[in-house]
Length: 548
Image (cartoon, rainbow, N blue to C red; front, side, top):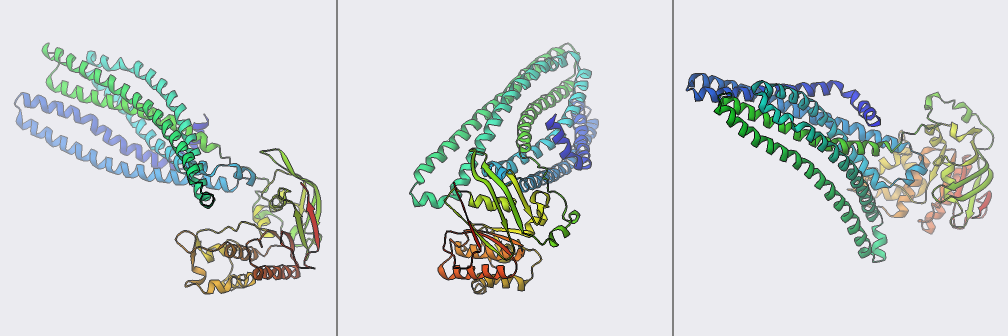
């Protein structure tokens, strides 16, 4: 039922297109039903030497085949079009759901598995939808063909009718096995893609420690496991199709022998036998299609379940920005942030890293957080940035619980600059505008000057339009960090969270950053910084240490 509800929801916007597809599929079906009758009539006319009438039948067959061809071409175009639309809708929906996942849930999702779901599971569903339309048309065709076969010769038709129960049992048995193995294959593919993604991301690690051989053997194992499972599934699929084809072959021979008997007894004409064998071939082809559709249905059910495993979370702060009372923030005069009895545990290991923390953050103040590795410093900043919601205690920003503030508002008030600088493939301008899409060229240059990267950008041929990342130039870690800080400054936040941002900077640019901190402080900004580097005397107003 869950799968049917998912299919119905996805197909509802395309009901007109699906009806159009069914119409264009149905018209060739009509022509296909007429053609064997005409060909049988042609054979009988030739046998009785009625050449003139036979020519007319050939003309009719030509018209029928031509119309069938034209409608088939239009149908294929329509099927491809709706298939791409459904894939686009599914992929964008999945990515939207991923974007709105709580950070702790997103971090726990294997990235190769996400890629597999977005790319392959959505494709499997869209193919199944178009094949469903074909299945409906084949079902109608199946009924008409049975009626025509019975009308031509009832006794011969019984041969085909007797196949029904045998094939039904075959579909049920093989369908269950295919569904079982398809779920295994998709899990194996997830594991394989996860490892492949990790190999590409951690390439430097393997090169440094000359561990290519170790990781290659692991890669071979994952690939072998995936392909072995795929082969087992394909064997079952082939066996299912082979069973149907074998039964069809037996029925074909039985029909030919029965046809000879009835022609010998003058109960059937040669043309009728030709028409009957053609219809029986169409009958058998429909059965084969039903078998293939049975396989596709089982695979689609697995894909639907996998896509539904990525939830569409109902966030507490899903209020639209326009509906939120911004005055409660802009008119607030107290401490920027108050933290009361904050505790946080890593869910996957159950280890508490922050325990009953209470502190306040004021404007025009710099708070430094220190502590040993693993004491929860970076985790604390992510919590304050609104990334993690599964904490206990209370965090209030300008008097409001941060969970009650819409994300679109909160991201403009509190800005986190991380230790690992993040840049996207695109121009330098595009990267900066992530901080403020409305920023002017003058504003871009100003923040770049503040972090000490403006002269470097000016030296590039295309300045701020220079591509970085894929198909562009490579930036050093320090340059990426400066770009990341400049992007953060464009937000013009009230509270800045800096997580070890000086770790990739040289002495000169560290001094530039300290001057930037002082400037932010003078502009009434609140700052929390994590840094193992010694900070200039007098820069920090308060320091706290987190303990493990």
